[in-house]
Image 1 (cartoon, helix red, strand yellow):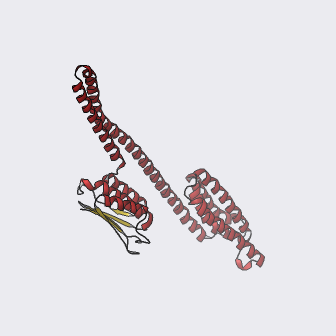
Image 2 (cartoon, helix red, strand yellow; image 1 turned 90 degrees about the vertical axis):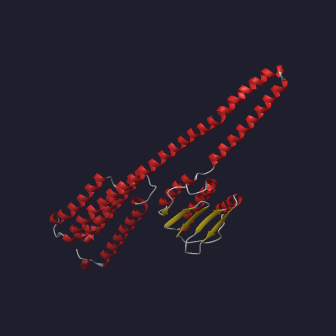
Image 3 (cartoon, one colour; image 1 turned 135 degrees about the horizontal axis):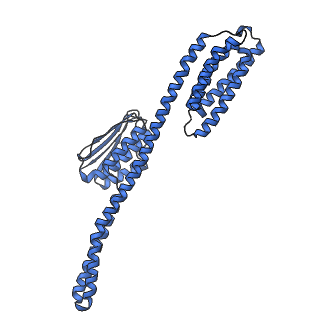
Length: 339
């Protein structure tokens, strides 16, 4: 049926139905087909409802459009390809293609539109191929996430084992010596009080040394490691789709400055990911210097937020200097130098 043969009422009806069809399809794409965070069950349930609604609207439009109704088939293919399980999606696309070919042969007055058939032959396989590629990408992302979780768990286990080793190494010898000296002092207290006092003084000294070693160990646990922070920085930048240019190792850095540079790297990368809008970020290490540069929007306000203010205090406490520069639109550079 040609649009020229439609009455005004039929045209209004057709445009209204097609407008509703387009609105439902767009809303489905935004809130159902490509919305992240939607559970698989909810996605399938909503997709079936959307598909049936689109079928109903297409059926209503068929009253006036006739054989031209198959021009809407690619949209139905898209919904099925991205929402249904793959076997059902394939079956739906095949069914729509078959209907476009066979229905005009069955219904009187309808004629086969080869352009629509060719379009369906192209659109259907293309959509299904995209679906397969998308599914593989999702599987890779899930595998990578599972690998990260496993690596995190292994890191926790390794850290616990390291702590256990450190505590054993620190306390094992000290407690053994303290036990021996306390027993000796107990035996000497009546026989040789002076020697017993010397043993107790020595016992006090050893206990203070052990306490200091424990505090140093706890402090080490709370301090970041520069090599580890480089790995974390790469993960964060890649996740934010920022191309990282990072040094291969930290051997060039003075060991006395590595904790400070690790704090610097952590804060700088956090700012790059959160605020810069950059596509590239570079980290440069020297014996007494670290520089983090991005090609983002530059400084959009005061340079010292809470994070940079805390970093500036750390740098000043270490006798170094912090430099933050970056004009609007030219990127930002954070540099820490320790003399």
